[in-house]
Length: 560
Image 1 (cartoon, rainbow, N blue to C red):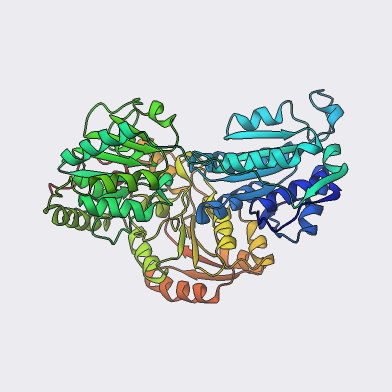
Image 2 (image 1 turned 45 degrees about the vertical axis):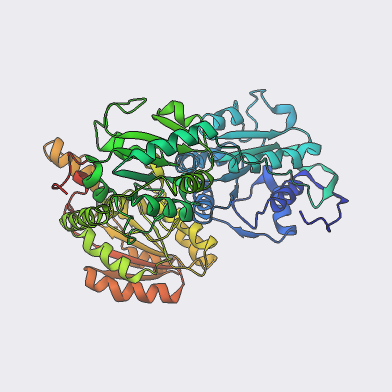
């Protein structure tokens, strides 16, 4: 807080004090739906003139906060009623936990005298905070109005400290409505200093890296803020850099050292050292090997160095050497200490380029997805955002079907695989980045999970371009049933609406195309309009080529 700002005492409700504390922690936008138990909270939003986006479902509020957070690195905030309201957000909270998004959920609670009584008060849960703690980073309860600022500060500090993840803050109905004197502006606790990197571990890592002839770097969400440092380290080592989902774009995939998952698989068998940077390393150890078998440490392959801010990760999956610390700081320290100790392999650039070409050519078999993705990449600006879905197009992007050029511009849902996250998450991305192009691509099945948010897009003029691939099915399920269950299609074939008329009924511009060539001018027009638009791609049921041979490859496509 600016030292020139003088704290004064102000009478307000505890609900308003929660909002004042959120503002003091940098919040400018809240996604939420009001209700009886949190009226004072929404009154605080009104008084502080925050941007308030009101979706049509609580789950969407949390997904929007996640999209806001994932695309900016700032903390996203949502507010919903307790009980069924906060329970409706849990799929999004699981997703935010899985993809390491800093999200704070504000909610209410039954009146103080009813907590834990089991009387059946409105929206009562047996143990709301305990239920939430089982799926997120932490859940806080404010029992006394006087503790509001301190606990809110702890909540916002918790989401940002260490491995980012969602938390919730609850306050009882009557406490939230109580008026008291609070410090205004709300005080904010200082951020704890960054933990020091172990000099011994750093020295050992430098020695391992200096001996490696064909190292590879693999990035996750923990490297999104470390693009400059990761790139510098990679260029020093002449080492390829890859990612599976969240870490894509840390090194641009059109950089000579940046490459997709499929291209990285081409180089994996010859790799003698893998440096995992803020990544769970799902791709090499759960998808390139026996992905049904869980192992706590690599049983084969190259030596492994892990860089992660969360020391627990070193126990969950044990490397040969772990460096606990912020990825940017660790990569910078490694770079500086390796400057006079490495002699990069001069042939690596040619090998990497060949791997990228082999992978890209092989991916052309996944049609029509690759043809559509090629058009989207041509039209989408370099700094534009792409939000996939659990769909045939989405799976194709996992392995490189859509090159990513900047960190945070590919906003993916992580390991939870929550169908329906894409469209509402993309709305949050666009709210956070109103002047940049944002494109959401969903299947017809996943889009219908949140279709009501077309009204939110129209009401708040959220200029998202929503592409819906209408193949009248849960395409992946249908393929699995075709291949493994004798084409006994059970629940996988869908009846779908006229998406263009549906969009228009919400006041959203609607378009329909049936080919990549037809998509290109329509998509360009929609991005230029910067208004809510929906584009329906008509597709035949069962037409799409399978991307799964590239997601679970048995080996390299050819020797490189």
